[in-house]
Length: 97
Image (cartoon, rainbow, N blue to C red):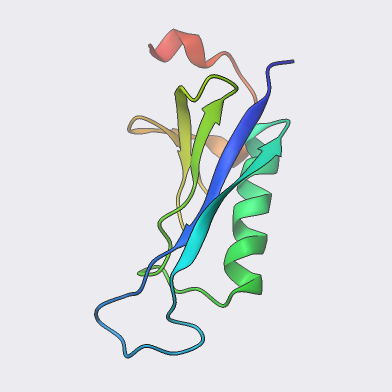
């Protein structure tokens, strides 16, 4: 199975005052095995850091060579371009290239 990495990070939401929950968190890459796992890791990161949707700027999923695969939105949905991947289910993304 190909390695996948998901970016976890946040930015300051300019619509809110700076606080413990309105903060920038430097990006880290976390290795995951599936798109569903990437979604779960992102939601856990968001909840643990009490991030609002305006703070979330992570979620990019890439392969071992840094090539973009998909993106996890704030609500945990996984997107390949503008195509929603239901429940982060695994299927052949190459058909959408």
